[in-house]
Amino acid sequence: VIKPRRAPTFASRNIIYLKMARLSILLLAAIVAVSTAFAPAAQTVTRAATNQVASAPKISTSTTLFAEDMTWEGEYPPSKVLGPIMSKMPSSTLAIISMVSLGVCVYSCVQSGLLLREPGAVEDGSWVKWYYVVEGFGGPLAWGTHVASWIQRKNGM
Image 1 (cartoon, rainbow, N blue to C red):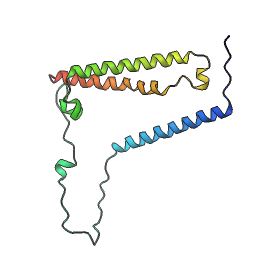
Image 2 (cartoon, rainbow, N blue to C red):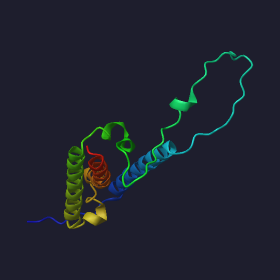
Image 3 (tube, rainbow, N blue to C red):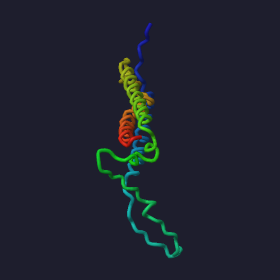
Image 4 (cartoon, rainbow, N blue to C red):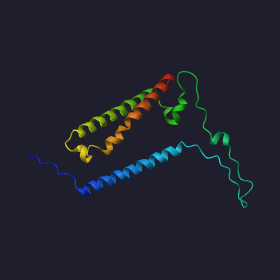
């Protein structure tokens, strides 16, 4: 005997909305935090206080504050554009990471699709699972690592 599903109560809907509101605020805060990393630093000049020591140590701005030039000429960039970790990884390792990431993304999409077919899943939101959302980020990761693998292969690594 199959029991019919009950409609969600008012209290359970409020709990779901509260959780979604918290998740939305968390995602918004994460987006703001990440976007501030790409904002240019303010070039304001501050006046020295009268009680400050006049012989403060000078900071060399030529090497500590500016990134090195990442421009290149030719078909592909040098390995240094991949950063300190991926520039040392061989192309085959990056390709394997790319394939695994793509597999995880495809798996999460298929499983979410199967959950969508369950009766009432769309109405109550039970088809959205946090682990499938996280696994969905495997797609962009797969794209980035396959580009890194191509760069390393072109550079002979």
